[in-house]
Length: 333
Image (cartoon, rainbow, N blue to C red; front, side, top):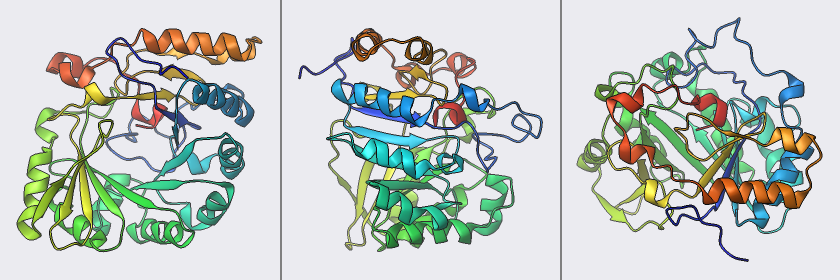
């Protein structure tokens, strides 16, 4: 199979699939309550891609070179019978199947997801301080219940990573405590610079805690050393010199990695985005429901990817940050 590449020579290797635009949290950097309130109009069920439609598109993407599929949302575990979709996708040969979740429903779902064929899980946890965590999720959800979800996933045999978005003045004072909580557990914590995804989270450059600062703070407590990462990795990796595991930092703002980006994103209603910071996408649901065959859909995907030139993070300015970009909750980060 010929590797499909965009105009900057980047292959298509990873597909992030949002399966719902709904979420049971209202995290201030993603779905702020003043925008996504009680009256917010979420997608109608008929607008969402069915599990069968998702599986068909993923199979076509697999034929074009995709090797990793990550299920996202919104919060993917609020979609009913998500384990049935996992089972359908796990039947596609050669795929690694991951899922990103806020962890709230993992205690009930972890074993079923593992049994269905999920490869690994990433849990979003921005603080281990209960007061700070409740303020960040803005629905008064306790941190201990997310930790129960992490434990349930591990007990089900699923490798776990923990993602933490770091925002100055909101949770940056808890970076060391978060690292400490997962040192020696086998779970890798990845600290993510607060990004200007979407148009509603009030992003300011002053709110960004640079990756170098995060690494320095943790390294002052437990010495760290860099670990070589793969060419397509978004995370800068560091291991504890005492052997207690490793951490990662995702530095999209201060150390852009556009040159290694091999990810496409499919929204819950079937729009394909070639960049996390995209202003517009490509409708796949219309041709899918109009009767296009697999070869026609594959041709459409080839055309979209081979025309791709996105490198937003390398070009970011105060002006680009103000563009009306697709919301993070819409394409799952």
